[in-house]
Amino acid sequence: MTGDRISEFFYKRMEKALNNMTEDLPEHCKDEPIDIDSKAKLSFIAWGDPQISALSPLRSFRVYKACRDLKNMKKPVDALVLVGDITEYGAKCEYKMIAELLRPVYDKFSNFFAVTGNHDIRIRNYKKQKERFKGFVKSIPNGQAGENEGYYFSQYVNGYKFIMLGADTNSFEASYLSQKQLDWIDSELAEAKEGKKPVFVFNHQPLKHTNGLPVTFLGRGKWRGSVGNESDKLRAVFEKYDSVIYITGHLHYCTSQYSYEDCGSFKAISVPTVGVINHGSFKPYTQGYVFEVFDDKIIARSRVFGEGKYASEEISNSTVEISLK
Image (cartoon, rainbow, N blue to C red; front, side):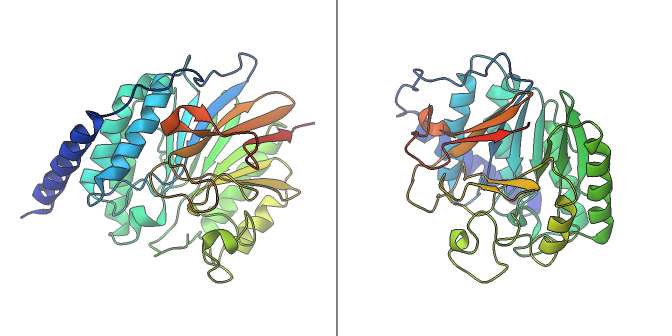
């Protein structure tokens, strides 16, 4: 079988399994819909690690349940951002499936962003996979993929700069950031500083020794779970400014005391997974964050999208408030 025929075979397999599972779904909870404050200057939703898999249709079902919550929103958000590991193997059928899962809620976000995770690129030809990934993003209405030769680019949303990072070569787990990209990030943050607004930087991997590492990555090693060798260099860039909100995935860790860390010159937010298991004490699948940005503060609220409700206030960092004064 050719690669395209194999991809189509697995797509049909996932689609069939999804159709079978949706028949027994309970009525969607509509008691607590996402309702963005009308005073917010910017709103967006961040999901981590859908990790759609040709070999595990159950992940597609979880993302489907999360999308039903978006469909129940009272009004659209300004952006939906997927912070990496969109797929398990970077296969065409996996990208096709998540595009189909998002199709019913295209009207619920004004912009669509995604960054690559290690699973999206690690076993593929880098250049070919770059085109595949960008093609997926651009296939979503208002999907923003940038015109850079690499994965990284910036875009303004409602006057706030979004910076999307991405590995400059294949890596099994870490994220190699070239000096060219690091210099570019520096220049982008310097330019944004003039606007005196927070800058939202999205990447798959967090920095070393932040967001509970190494505990939140099963306690493995000094760098594992992080950007890797370029982690200290990226941190040094962030520390030159005081406006960076760094939003990541990769850890597969639930909403917890580790989800938010005030690192002084920058803030680090680790987003739980929407498709695979969340480690830690708060076990529900389909967790993520809803962000509202005001002139004087940012409010990020943890939500269990598949259950149509916000995480209980008893959960640490179920609500994160960042002062912008």
